[in-house]
Image (tube, rainbow, N blue to C red):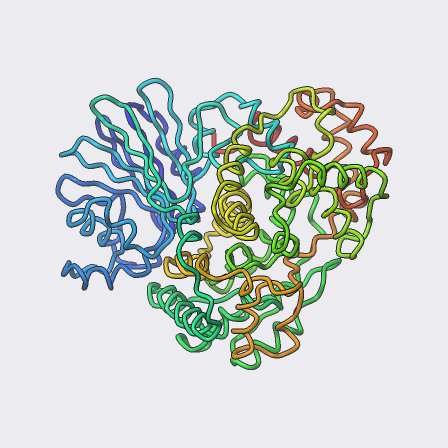
Length: 618
């Protein structure tokens, strides 16, 4: 796991600034090679091939690479294509594979990656990302000049781009930056499963998808339960084993009280001795430490419960949000930051359960989509739900049945697909469009959802495709990458392996949601590995006491940023009287949603003042 940076037709006057801005991603070594027209930078976190043979940027003949990530099956691919070399570096494996296969190597690889290949013979530069987009990559373009980076902060520090107002309005509506969008003009995020080619002669670029999960949802379904269980078991074993074997450092595992991390831990214990496991316990959240401890005891792991303290939350929050280089609304980034920081004291590589919910149907919102197509509900049905939603009182119990029903009625009544999806997921500014002074442009989201709505698949499959391409990519993977890499900790996600990404979409709906039982096949597999009292636990994730924070330790900070300043950025997008009424509890929303709205605004202001208006790397 590393940090990468590069430029085309752009002279970097302060190479040290770039290297410092990415040093946390690669504290072991920082190098760069200037060229004309291509310069490449690399900061290394040494995990495979710890010797200098793994140093980057790496060159072989006329091909040069800077690479962030891991290729877990690179030794298997070396054997398959008879590619021999004494070095165990997966970066070298990429160069060897590129020599043999060109970009046709991408579908062969099981890994997480973002890389730049400069092929001087072809006069091309190729930028590529893994299937899910687990490893980040951002691209700046102005005229004939290009720059790319693992993180936005490095580009912002060097280039000082202007604010992308359209993207900020979109963030305030959705709670995340959709797919390619970033808060900066001229900078876009390369999407997961894509390649961008830049011709060094014409300086034109083109992009294409080399992986699209939607295609796998349209193949014949695996409906036999016994066969499906056997395949899932085997593929999880392969994924976990590869992610352990392809590390020259000790590999640990995050272990919550849920089945995803429980399965990963159970399987991992068979491939490494004395597996270290980590569970989070925090004030105000549901305590899953006893459930996690029962798994740790069964598999005799070296288990630690990490007690997170939020005593320094007001001091730490600006740094936590600043790490993202963009306004970041997902408040679970806070405990993710703290647990990664604590885990780094014991381990450098850690397994997690990311992706399981979006692939196997783990969220409660999937249940109604199992039985009703909200992507194409008749107008009359929508109007009935819309009228009902306006008269029902808001719910203040986040996990109560009434809250679930209230949200279901709300998103069932929205006219546009973007409103349906926004309400079903983040539930931020849906219904408050008239409070914007700069209307969000949701055409990109409407286009994505419109294409998904036309797919010849079930409503549940449509929602799973949407979540994989939107929430997982734009929020959840961003959260975990930044939270871990801020502490030079590498997170590996077996559920996002090549085999499982190609297998999970072929499962029938009943193997994902059966009745009201979510994640059916994973729960069935868990019977083989996990304690009975853990298997049917509901999905929780980090239980963030956000409304308590916004009414308590973060209240003064939020007031100062939002209402104590005449230069608050949000006022360029949202009416200030709305925010004042929201602050005073005069807007008809639940306490939880009020807290989310205020936190989204607070995140925006922290980014604006601490990142955009300042640069800590100078």
